[in-house]
Amino acid sequence: MTTKRLMIIGYGAMAQEVHRLLPAGLELAWVVVPESQLVSTREQLGAGVEVLSSTTQCEGRPDLVVECAGQPGLAEHGEAVLGRGLTLAIVATGALADEALYGRLRQAAEAGGGRMLVLSGAVAGMDGLAAAREGGLESVTYEACKAPGSWKGSHAEQLVDLDALTEATVFYEGTAGEAARLFPANANVAATIALAGIGMQATTVRLTADPAATRNTHRIHVQGRFGEFRIELNGRPLEHNPKTSMLAALSVVRACRQVLDPVTV
Ligand SMILES: NC(=O)C1=CN([C@@H]2O[C@H](COP(=O)(O)OP(=O)(O)OC[C@H]3O[C@@H](n4cnc5c(N)ncnc54)[C@H](OP(=O)(O)O)[C@@H]3O)[C@@H](O)[C@H]2O)C=CC1
Ligand SMILES: O=C([O-])CC(=O)C(=O)O
Image (cartoon, rainbow, N blue to C red; front, top):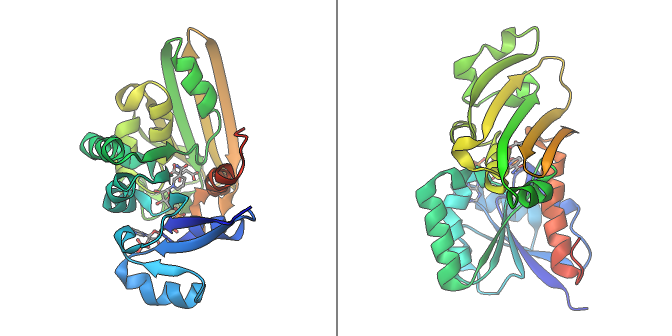
């Protein structure tokens, strides 16, 4: 079997975990990082990987492009990748709460023949939710609970004193679209659930900080014509970024494996 070639956009905590777990048969050939990280990332990766600041500098043809660069990274690079007819697997799904950006990405994919794969990321059940939608959905709610430290540097700091919490505290309630915009490094999952279900406005979101939490907990409750389901997922955070659950990185690894495997499960 010939080796296939991967491009990763972004080389932070998630991308590095994905790199460590890449399945045999898929090699990391290109990494796209901000200008300011070119030198350090080249030193880190050595000669075997081409480190670029724009996807348009890539002269080869990746078999898969994965975005691990956050919402600004998807906004910066998404159109070019899709416009070249490539497959782009994304985790910064919250960027799609911006209707104008979503429209441009769809348009680029349609014009160029590219495909955008919205990965399940830190949650589970997106297959069941999307299937349930076919029968009609009545309500979808999403609750996230993380340790206060995992909300540091986010909009949560404007809503609650994270260092003073002594018990689990709900600090935000709103729609998936708003949550994804306000918490770009923490609430992409809200947008993923909205995209698989009843949309950015109708999906209800509640965010909690809990000083006793050691996991990133995600609870999804769905009601519709199919019946009802509840999922609770207690994900381990990544060692190098507690905002991000390990499962999100693993969902990228799964997308990588699907490029190699003729059977998709
Ligand atoms: N769907 C889901 O379930 C989940 C989605 N996510 C999304 O994944 C993203 C990545 O997570 P994680 O790796 O832990 O975050 P990190 O902050 O560790 O890594 C992101 C990296 O991307 C870089 N970056 C920023 N802008 C660009 C750009 N325009 N082009 C290339 N690289 C860029 C960042 O650089 P710099 O530090 O200089 O900004 C950083 O090095 C999160 O920001 C979040 O949006 C995360 C968890 C779950
Ligand atoms: O990884 C997680 O637990 C969820 C997350 O950060 C996001 O949805 O952006």
